[in-house]
Amino acid sequence: MIQTDILIIGAGPTGLFTVFEAGLLNLRCHLIDALPQPGGQCTELYPKKPIYDIPGFPEVRAGQLIENLMKQIAPFEPGFTLGERAETISEQEDGSFIVTTDSGTPHHARVVIIAGGLGSFEPRKPVLERLEEFESKGVLYMVKDPEVFRDKKVVVAGGGDSALDWTIELAEIASEITLVHRRNEFRGAADSVDKVAGLARSGKVSVITPAEVTALAGTEKLQSITVSQKEYGHISLETDYLLLLFGLSPKLGPIANWGLEIQKNAIRVDNAYDYVTNRPGIYAVGDVNTYPGKLKLILSGFHEAAIACQSAFKHMYPDKRFVMKYTTVGGIQGFDGSKKEAKKEVVRTLV
Image 1 (spheres, rainbow, N blue to C red):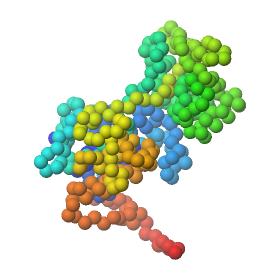
Image 2 (spheres, helix red, strand yellow):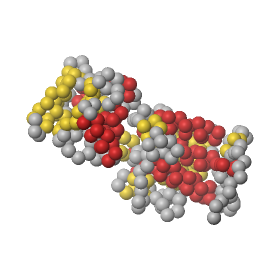
Image 3 (tube, rainbow, N blue to C red):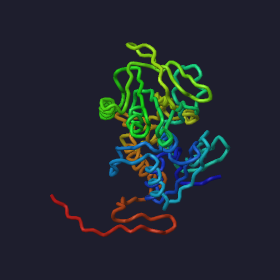
Image 4 (cartoon, rainbow, N blue to C red):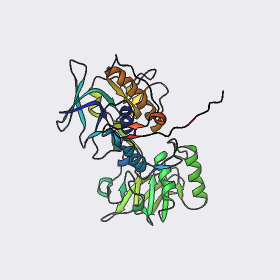
C-alpha cells in the first residue's frame, strides 16, 4: 500500500502546484492521474498552446508550464500513480482515507485533495456520416503538435476560445486555414475575435458564418468537406485536416460517488475559509470545484491549492503551531536535506 501525507487526485497544473505548497509545509504528496503522464489537459490536449494569464509569464506554452512545475516540485520528491483512475474511497477510524484505483492499487493518506480539473473528457462530436471513418485520418478533436499542419489546408469548426486560438496560431503555419462557425457571433475572448477578424481582412484566414460542416469526403483519408451556408448554399472545400473544436464533455467519474456535495458536475467547497468539501479531510481545488464567484483559471487553482494546504496542515496537526515563512527569506528545503538559499536583501518599506 502506498503511504503519504496528502493524496492528490489529478496531476494537472493545479495538482502539481499543490505538491509545492505542501512541500513547504514538509508534507509528502502522492498523485493519481488516469493519464499516462503528468500535466492533465495541458499535456494531453494542447501542449503547444500558448497561455497568457500565468503571472510573470507574458506567454508560456502549456507543455512548458508543466515542465516548469515539474522542476519546481522536484525537491519534494512526489510519488505518482499514472495511467490509473481513482475509483473508491473509504474513511478509516482515525479519519484517514484509503483510495483505491481501477487497477486495484491502494493509497493511504491523512488528507485527500482533489485537483482533477473538469474530470475525464470526451470531445463533443457533431452528427456526420463517415465521421468515425476519418478520425485520425484527417479529422481531429485536439492539437498536440502544430507542426503537423505546416503547409497543409486546414478547416477549423467551432466558435469558442479553442477554435479562435488555434485559428490564430495556425494562420502562420498552414498553407490555408478556414474557420467555420454556425453563428456570426463567437463565444471566445474579445481580443481573439478581433485578431481573427484582422487575419480575415488581411487574407490570411477565411471565415465562413453562419455555416456548418455537413459532409465529409475522401478515400483512404479526408480530402474534402461540404460546408452549408445560408446565403451561398453548399460549399465544397478541399482540406487535409478538419479540426472539430466544439469543446469537451466533462464527467466527474467515480468521484461523483464519494459522498461529496455536487453542483452542476463540480464539487462544492467552502471558499470562505479553505476549499474543504462537505467531508472533513477532503479538499477540492482548481476547475473541479465550485463556489460563488468561482473563476476557472489556472492561477485561481494555484491560490486555492496554497490555502487548502495550510488548512490540511492544521487538520493533520491541530495542536502544532505553524509559522508562515516566505520562500524569499527561508529558501526551499527539500526532503533530502538540500536547500536553495534565498538571497539576503534589505527591504525598505515606504509608509
